[in-house]
Amino acid sequence: MTASVHVHGVPGRSLLEAGVRAYGAADASRGSFIEQAVARALEHWLSHRSDCAGLHLFHDLGGFRDVARHGFGPVSLGTANIDHVVLSGAQWLLIDAKGTGAGTLTTDDRGRGILIRPDGTVRPQRWLDSRRERSAAGVLVRLTGLRGWPVWVLPDATIFGPGMTRARAFQGGGTVTQISDVYGGSLDEVLAVPQPPADPEAVAALTRYLARPPDAAPG
Image (cartoon, rainbow, N blue to C red; front, side):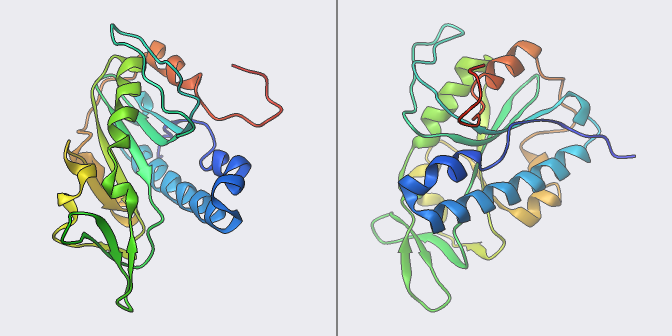
């Protein structure tokens, strides 16, 4: 019988509740759908690992203002949230779900991220030009005292061009994979089996930043 990983939070909650104002109804709905699809893939992958009982999966973390612990100074992310985090006793994975759509993800001649669609049209991918994950990783270091690794999960309809990893987002390292590969266990390469169980103090620290419904009392 397959065991279950410890799951905290609701994937895509922030987008459904506040994203309409920021991104419009269509983009918010699509973003939430992708986050939920990635969440299902992560839960499937983790629950099929022999060490799943000690792992914790967090969905939709936010409200990071002046986070300072474990000897590090304060870091804030403004209104940005973290889609998913996998936490063990040795490391974490910072996981960003991207609804990029069909096409080839690569960079242009200036090193800017783009998606070349099947019809040949080009759509900018500004997340590839950002180092936001570095700040988010800094938050996780402060909350857990651990180092980790960034991961971007894309739909299966998105394929990776040879110039993709030249983008600024990957200058500090990171892994890009597809939803079907997560189901297949591809992330075992960056979260080796077995992992020690997550520290309850680190679990509690992350839990305080879970997105909550508007009428919920503060944690």
